Length: 213
Image 1 (cartoon, one colour):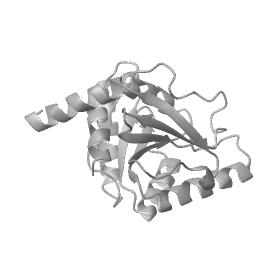
Image 2 (cartoon, one colour):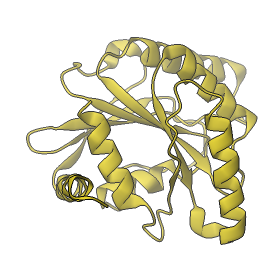
Image 3 (cartoon, one colour):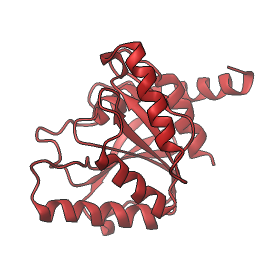
Image 4 (cartoon, one colour):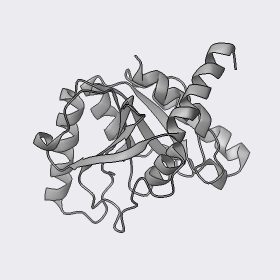
């Protein structure tokens, strides 16, 4: 890590250890907060570990509530970081609804599609993928949606402590190959474990860097 990267990591660490507060939930676009701060969004399949990663990033135990029924939370949840606010984190509703009715799925698609296409302060999206399973068809669908909206995104592998290092290396390579097929995908794959705090400092620095572009 060079001097600039270390300075960014130190700033990110201080920022996330300070004020992080829930702002509001938006079940529809007209509930969105004023677009006055940069935004970094998080998306992923239901049960990918999104809430755990948000909690690990912010150093909180329950900043992001874990839904009892995966796929049922159909809202965009906004959190402010910094005092005064430096940027916002946006927790997008999970996808891959095994039990959700078709109307709920379509409502999710419409909300997410319009948010991605029209949200000016959205700087980057983090696409979370479970290391144990790799990229699934539902993830590819989300990647295509991000490509079409021209929203740059980083792929973040979660739960990396749950598989062997040799298997993880294969998943990272396969994920990188998939990313190269998508114009909006960032080339660097982030490998994380919320439980072991693996890759958390690096991801904090990446989020801060993205908020400043």
